[in-house]
Length: 115
Image (cartoon, rainbow, N blue to C red; front, side, top):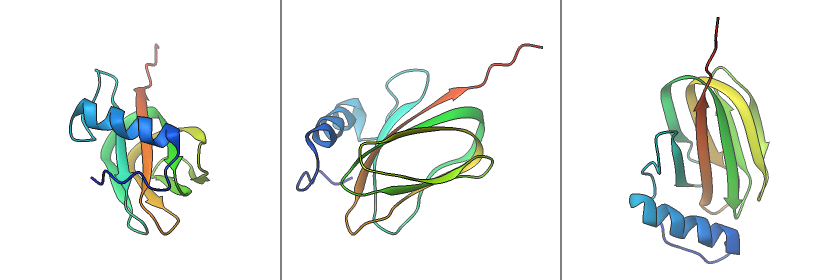
């Protein structure tokens, strides 16, 4: 994990501090699954291999856009500062689209169906 803040927004810097405080930039804060992670440029970051059906939420702290790909869900570009949510399951990857590493924050909520 990089501690670089050059070119990052103030929000991104705060998210990076939060990531460091939660433990090595990737430890969960609680039982629901909330993480911050740096994504290397042009190298997809594998966030999940066998994720159960859930709502997956991603916030891009920048400095560049990222591409979110969910195996059983949507594939879309997330611009700097934007938040996107999708139903997802299985493999989830995120790729930084620019020339620099990008900080993302993500969360997932299991789908609880009552029959």
